[in-house]
Length: 188
Image (cartoon, rainbow, N blue to C red; front, side, top):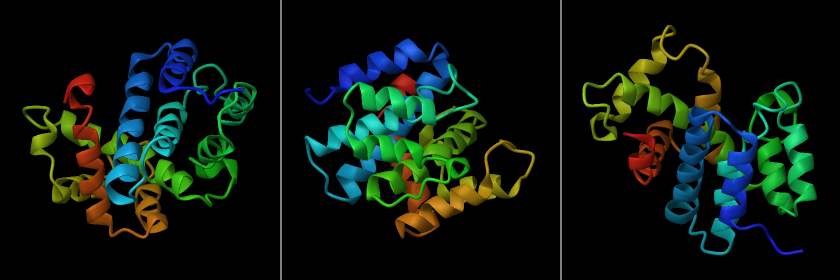
């Protein structure tokens, strides 16, 4: 069996995820995970494609199987021949699964997931809705506002950077840079 391609991963996301917002979230996490792989950790193709797939597909089963997410999705990915590293990263992307994040990829998906969404939320409240207006200090300030983006677990934002061993402000800046690579698709 051949390793699934980026096109295969996108088609799976599109098939299982009717929500445009959740598809865009997958694209955002893919971009930030890929940015980290390439710019911070020196990952190259074909392994960089594995990083992309993990970011893109981390929530692909959420709308179809919210009660068993991401376990049901992991079964599907195994059946379709995705690498174990992708499956393990997806299983570890949330604290609720109890799956330890051992690989650098798993730690990166975890660190980029909620942070990408939070930074996008910060961008939406800027007058221009542009990532160019988002700075590290504005993200930190919004984190202290418990009423802003209330569902985002602040402890996970901090823990993600900690697990990567990267200072928090630097992590925020890295995620902003990763998001800029897909700003047109995200409308930012």
